[in-house]
Length: 267
Image (cartoon, rainbow, N blue to C red; front, side, top):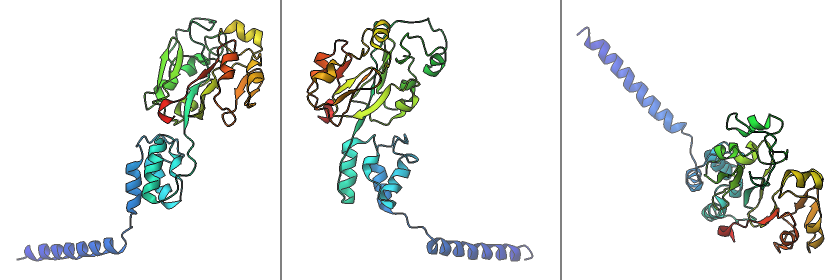
């Protein structure tokens, strides 16, 4: 009997506390908006942080609680924006989809090398040694640091040059942040023509170091009917907002450093 009484007291207290906690959980329950979970399911789940939030969970909460537009997700593209907009009953708005492009064509066949690099396969490490192996200090290092951070297998390295597969690129921007040469840029997906060069040397030096580098001849500037091309420190630059994708600049370029890369799935 002396043992049963303490056991009964403890059991009774446990029952009372249990009922109290159960009641408290109901009273102080934090209501979770089911729309957050629904929007989270529609997001691609890359958790790349390119939207500016801590992954897809953070963006889903911001869309519901802060009114952030679903186009902040660069990975999902038009399909995700439309799905979320339809679910929430909001306007799709102006959707600007971007893709990454490597502004360089200096592969092993086109560029002159200063030395043979035998270090670790990392663009930052090679770039620390006199700006890399290429005589062109603005060109792609070609050791694939951008490829390592791409979560979508959208980058390959061929013949010493990084190349982006536009149909796989989601425009997350991880490669842009990783490149030590800053030669990967995000451009509107429907902007077809790009100057694939980042060389700011004078024409004579540029031609000497690379077969396909911009030599600042300004032929593209002269033939552009929409005045979409300007010169920036010996480098031709195309304004995607003015460009009509007519292609006259590519035909006029003697170095063939202006190319057309419209992503077919967005045409």
